[in-house]
Length: 154
Image 1 (spheres, rainbow, N blue to C red):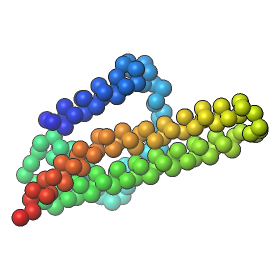
Image 2 (image 1 turned 90 degrees about the horizontal axis):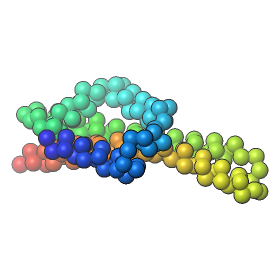
Image 3 (image 1 turned 90 degrees about the vertical axis):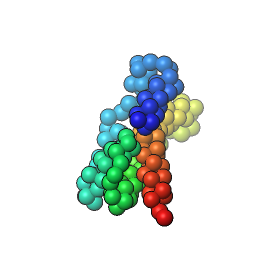
Image 4 (image 1 turned 120 degrees about the vertical axis):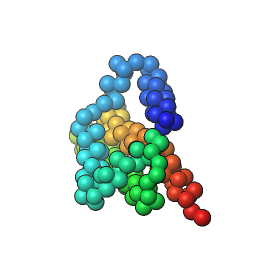
């Protein structure tokens, strides 16, 4: 229940932060970049057999209790794995976008070329937004799982 309140509060807070309306939110959306971050997360979960444990983490976060301690540990590892992979691929996307924008400039002697580099850098920073949003969602789940596991120790 508290996690649902947290998610709703975060959504409202982000919408207020980008100007109070969903029209401004479009400036921060890029489907290819989102897929560049999410697809490796899904692939790593699928290839390690942790997809079910990741889904269970959200059930635990929304208040389902009574599972085995091993299930909580598996879910915690799956959540941490997604957080790490999203950060790696978000930063990788930022590096690719930055290097592509610098390579596209032919003449560095003008002020206008510096302006284009700054604009392109701002676009490549979108790939850092998605991992941060994933972390905002998953960090409380990770902390709740860890708290439960610490309470189970004698």
